[in-house]
Image 1 (cartoon, rainbow, N blue to C red):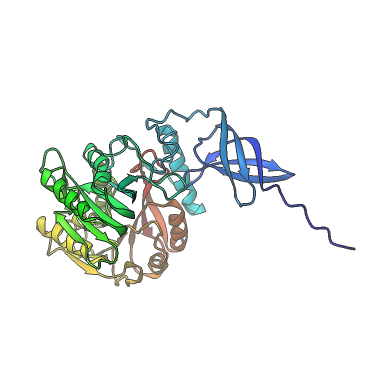
Image 2: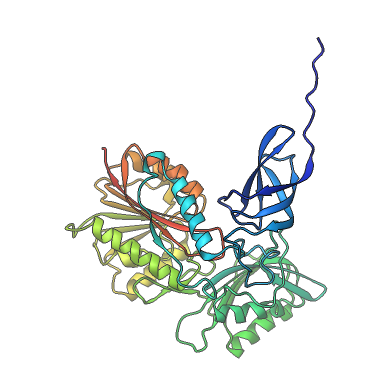
Length: 442
């Protein structure tokens, strides 16, 4: 009997659907039935409870949808404060209320926990201000014909979007953002611009930029940046263009962040730092409180910090014990960490080691391991932690999905002591979490 080839599903169809939940990554999820099959559809720009007419691409799994019409609003939908929110990819949840964002973030974090831990309480640290909070940002730029366009990438593209005002940037950064395109007039190509706050002390606060450019920067671009530094609105810039091996520096391009102890923290140019000063202070202080509780009564407790960066947590851990080892792979970040420790008189209490955290061997008799990995997580480290002798782990994560993978490796040996959520990125689907684990089995 000849085989009958199954009929292929329609590659695209338009239908009505109700959004059931918000997924990690920002899209809403609806379940629809197409030709007798139930399909999950991921839809951007929606909130739970929205009733939408949506064009669905069925050729992908899960299917992807685009809203054609909003038929009725979910309870958590609000009018975005930014008129470019639907187009700009910087704030994917500006159409969702703060309460809706918080509920979805809590659900994502709870779902990331191992099954046996999902009933554990989660402490919530809500955002105090959802606008004008960002003191660091990454912009994208494209230039041709003597004109440059600078902005966040358009949603689901790699093309920058020009906006009149960015409502989530700190006023000093917003002022700088609006002037960056003028610095690139005459350039050709595209690149990335990181903007951050310069060292405190100036009034108004100045900005610094880190520019990585693929293409040609005209001599007038360098002259324009020099003029901006001379005029005072820009403290400095570091520029890497074309095939140049070493970056060019104009002024002082060092970015700064407020540390948990309230003092300025020097960062490596172009290096990692939390998105806002206020959020960083709350996070760093809480990590220090957890570490203090974990090391109570042990003045010489051995503490290992992985992915230490410029010492954001190191300067908070060093006062607790004189036995801190901070591991960081970036040489510039290590230099900044040593400067930050020395500025606080803590240079003898913490050793900064330039090394790959992913392959670092956890020393015997380590009492506490603090790790703050990038979005890709720390699978290799967690596999080793499970078989190490470390008694406490404080895992700081910016991605619930990689956190879920890594915590699964720690379940056999650890139990959760505290699980906490920090709203450090209001108006977006991103969230920070801190999980304190104590060893349950050798």
